[in-house]
Structures are given as structure tokens and as C-alpha cells.
Image (tube, rainbow, N blue to C red):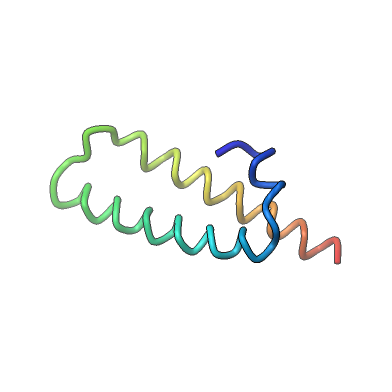
Length: 64
């Protein structure tokens, strides 16, 4: 997900999406620990996406 797409979301949508992505990330890491995932770079990409979303959310909180 690109930063422009993230910035277009509302704050509540962004908070919900962060929770969903964190749950997906945890599940992916758990699955990878049991048996290797086909594309382990998914883990890294998902972690970066979560960080981007949290950054935008934090910026919005600071600007209020």
C-alpha cells in the first residue's frame, strides 16, 4: 500500500486497518515459524506497511 492511499483514509478507517494488518502480520509470522512461507519478503513488506500507517496516524494526532 502506497503512502498516498494511506493518507486518503479517514482516521477511524486507518486505525481499523492497522489492527487488521497487525493481526495478519502476527498470523503470517506464526505460519512462517511452523512451515516456511512461499514468499518471506511478504513479512517485511507487511511490517513496512504497518509502520507507514502508524506514522500517518501519529502525524494526524500531532496536528490536532
